[in-house]
Image (cartoon, rainbow, N blue to C red; front, side, top):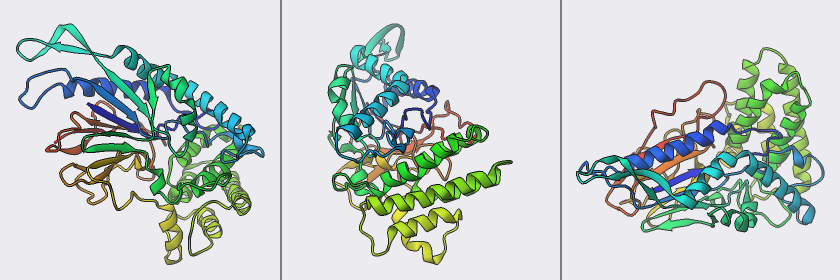
Length: 399
């Protein structure tokens, strides 16, 4: 059995806090999926032989942190920035200790499931330990995970650039996104620049307002999880929802946009466009209007990143594009998975329409069966919660 999850974005807690309950819910969902995957097509139960769990990038969010509000930035070279990044990563890992501890325990001891009796049914009085292999892929928000490979290996968790089996491969895929494509050393991507010098800057400024910070902290979490193209609409919707402090939040956001524009002129984020992307993005963010006009087509195309058109043979899961409710595929919005056609796919999450990123759960009971088609299916046990946050799970079951 293969489990793919992506975009947990565990932060250091200075600006964004990830609920710990989500971590236990994920572990419980994997356990349920292992039990369901033991039921074969003929109805007989046989425990799965092994489980691969792949955290397909952005397990940690090392960008949305107040640590970067000084002179150093995550993309700077040198020991100082590297040490700060390592500190943010360690703090984020501490906040994800329930998830990491659970995965490490499975990697060490296996996952306990019922054994099968002679009639092919789960035996309530006997258990079997299923081997579990855990792999973490570095993402665009946590590339420093690669430097923690030795520390994670001691807990039984492997770090790799990609995961592959017959007919199916998993990668993060940020290299296909113009917003996050690799930049020159010491130079940020446009996505990283916006995450640090717009979103984190805005959050750090609002944190200085104790009267408004409790109400605005969920807004910051939504901005950190959103596509850049959706950010002004999210702020605009929030302003319409707020009962007080509207002018302060609006002015603080626009001040952060102006500060980002000045900083971006200095940093020169990577990206080749036939227009002045910095001025265009700043104007888009400042407008707070979710309805783009004809003049906004270029900036919308830049900020609204999509999965790549081409894909290697076989099925490819891109963790970077996790989060659309429909489970969009490269070639078709209807078929979420089709291994026969070799369609590239994204992992989907149950999220609000404006939210793009969020930890998703995809389960392949048998990734080496090319004759099986897959469809997205929500896990009914995980109900969406009210409020302005993302509910992070969607299960993929055999169709």
